[in-house]
Image 1 (spheres, one colour):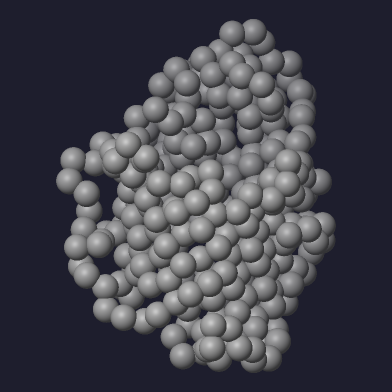
Image 2 (cartoon, rainbow, N blue to C red; image 1 turned 90 degrees about the vertical axis):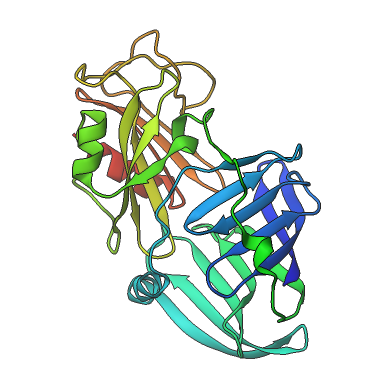
Length: 303
């Protein structure tokens, strides 16, 4: 158990939070946000499900997303990035190992970690955008290794499933492309261009503002990822639909208006890239943490 300080770079500057973290050593983790924008919120990962408790005390079960096997993810990172040992350091009076994960390609992010030598716990984790700017810094400011009560990780009774999310926030995983196509009535988006080292990690569905289910797919290379969404029309209609409500290129409303084939928008900041593109078969939106220039190549290769 311990306390962490997390600082995230936002458009308007850096935002920091302090979080109390406890873990049972078997995959269950509880995070209590003590300060920052999410103050009072609790996140509980247990039994393959993530629950969120809001400030009013109500729990919701968040949409399921495949986490992946940590060992397989580590092998991907070693294969796709330049991973190096940076020596030993002291942190919180503990011996730590410095690991540097450098990008092989200019469109990929990078990462540095201080890992507790005795336990493998990540004591300090720093993420960088492809342009070298820091995306986030998360570090323990205190930590101790003691048994944790099982009650801290018990699933909350009566947690309601998330019912209000739509658009990218509603992404939930499915077992296969066939399962997605059966549920949505539309094929999983398959780009002709995929950056080296990236492969499909998760098939999923997205819920539109009108309640339709549309296909989505996530690619990853161990560290970076991007997700391609099909913005919504009713199954069987095919073709581009209306732009929907709300500002910005990632709008997932109920339709209205019309899209022109070939429409293309790109948006990028230090945290992510967002691309939207209209073809004769669909309106695609891709969100990822690789550079917008490379994500645009992926999106332009969609049918």
